[in-house]
Image 1 (spheres, one colour):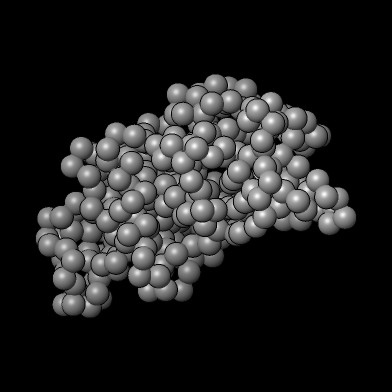
Image 2: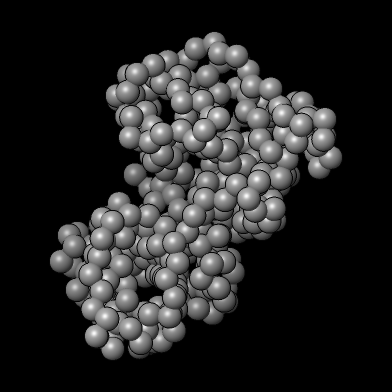
Length: 318
């Protein structure tokens, strides 16, 4: 099969399309011919030598998500048939013509979705949906999404809207805020530099009629975490998804303004089929909104398997 191979660590120029052996499905796995995939931050980090592939995953072929058709079945596979249109997440290797995946780690592609669009859904929508589940999000709640113009940020915005909530967000540029409004963002707060976070609490009070945010999805970490506590409603919940703004923060435990609103903090984590049999249910629910036309992947960067391997775009609004 053909695959986009990382020949050495570096920029886009290190990628080459090469012929490599096709993977073979295990007893509970399916072989999928990839029609669509996407580019995520982890893929860029892997290419530059800053992200190690998990054990058993090709070290020189990136790609965490895919959509395509089932072509072969492991001897114990009962959920799927040849020709089924499926999509899912794997540890790596999706930037290729074929991938293998556990039968519980994939979901059916809704009939009204093209496979090229479906390939851009799993990573961001599962991440966003799982974070909202961990936060016990309910219809009618106010949700603040940091880095709202990112792939996960746009997915979370659409899911909040589809599930009956109100989505608010932050970004470093006004353009991303304005473009995210087409996906259901009500209001946004521009953070050109960390010092601007001092006004986040006032923004939250004004945007929610004094209540504050019931849920915060923090894709940035660092100073965003501390500022989020000030902007939260009583018994609010914050889920840390990423740490691009820093892995440390300062929380004054003697400040009742922070501790009274801080109900629970959770860290989103990856899910594999072998450790969580609910993975397929999570996949199905998070994909359903896209299949019903409530969500869109139009601003995510999508790759077809024949795409130029030199492209280095990242998902989300650029």
